[in-house]
Image (cartoon, rainbow, N blue to C red; front, side, top):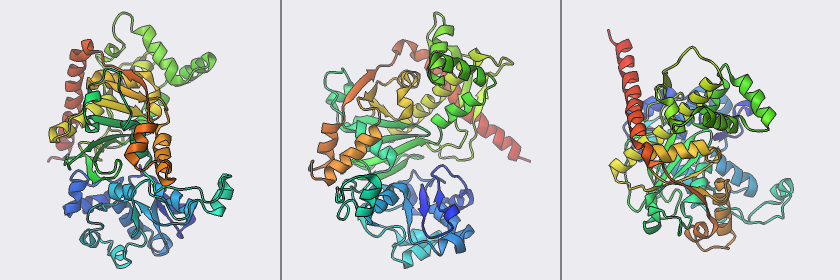
Length: 453
């Protein structure tokens, strides 16, 4: 989220999933500037440079010229809490092209038409940068303390982006006694998947790894001293909601779930168990396949023009049909995770265990499908709100309760449950994965046909 202060108050926030800056990001990518190698080779429309350029080109008088600061949401919140405008290294490195080693690259901003930021010595986007967990100013201001009902002066930490806080909250957990391969492996063998409205796939390494189509490598952006690669899917929970709520049987589903005192997803999971009969539940989608990029592909194809696809539809619109479409959508998201993992491993990562957190990790079907489709065990945190654990890690560092982020995350994150893949179903999911890859291949062929003479 980008927040613009002192402009038109009705237009002072642009959400991260806002794709209005398509033209601007195309022009930025056409520069082929060297900073782009640290965002997977191609900048995403969800990053801040294209949004800033859109604001300058479209809201110059009402926002661009009047703005005092442009903030990512975590930095806006820490400013409101402390009055300190220092930015988090995480925000600037991951979304703004800042380098933890070299700082800002003047040539990039001049090349893309945002030279005013350079002239202003980056005061509007951040010329004081602190590592996550560093103490900000004198802590909570009296005004903020009054708003929050807390004592003034409580330590406030330089922030992390929410997904990165989730990664920090799970990736360092002690896994002894759970029979996991990662127990005897470095933390770099773990992939944190933070899954809610969208999903982020956080993998760390001791040395920089450049993965085409995957954001990063970012130095010290999540775990200090490690390089971060960030894969992602622009819509996951949002896509499941879209598919389920748009189905003709959704009113029936709502009524039955309410009568049973369940969420619609708990009801769908139990309904799938009823209709699967003797076969594994995942086999219900043998004829139904989904490509999940209804809002473009963030990773690893980095193509915002891609669309969603469903093949295998019938005239049926009953509850069974809705449940199976829901299952196929969940599987498609898991296949997307598999595609990201393969891209990361091809570039040099070695991943043996998934650590899931976020709203979708509360859905046992979503978790099991990720285990089955990737072939990797899934670790769930004891504290399901792992983003809060990550934020607490930062606070504990800022207050001096822990000497380092690594020490705090090792002590504060705990394993709740481990879900293992059903290896006996591997051949089925391998075949579905082949179909999954064919879907995007065919989509590109269709686009080429329609663009041809």
